[in-house]
Image 1 (cartoon, one colour):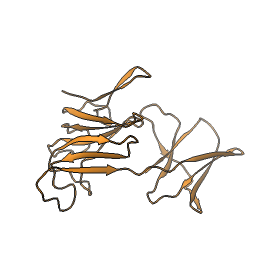
Image 2 (cartoon, one colour; image 1 turned 60 degrees about the vertical axis):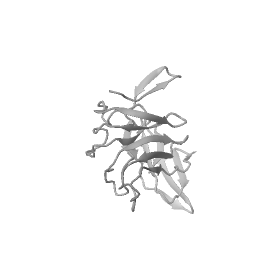
Image 3 (cartoon, one colour; image 1 turned 90 degrees about the vertical axis):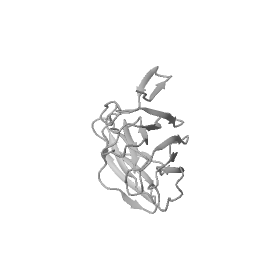
Image 4 (cartoon, one colour; image 1 turned 30 degrees about the horizontal axis):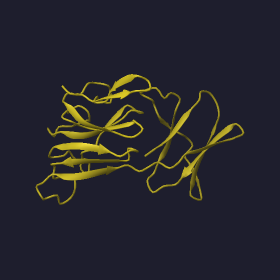
Length: 196
């Protein structure tokens, strides 16, 4: 059965991409990989039914693997999350991984798709705002622009896969167009990210 792998030429390692969130092997063939410029994201087509929960449509779907979080997400769904009623193929990802295109024979991924022909779809992800970090005494101050798409501040003490990201408290204070969070510096080193 065909699988998708990524070869890291700097670390001289090969990683399996076509797997479930728990690391189990895909139960169907995977093909047509497309990788983002930084190597973090891989979009691919798969016949597997165990890569996402309740994938029972019996058609090939398009998935997105995030190597930073070791997570997989099904992209070929309708706006309400419903399963595609046709096959989904040939994903292509943008350099930054913010847009993925694919072709689909499904008629239920968008409203009024009645042409009876394969169509091209684009999945877009909002780019996170820049996270600013500064030290003020024994505190770390994190700030970022407010955005029409809400982003949550998360932290982890370990970047090894699978990293466990937790919400950062307290909730941000908004001043002008900026979110601010102040945390005391203590214990282990922390890594921060904005996630929508």
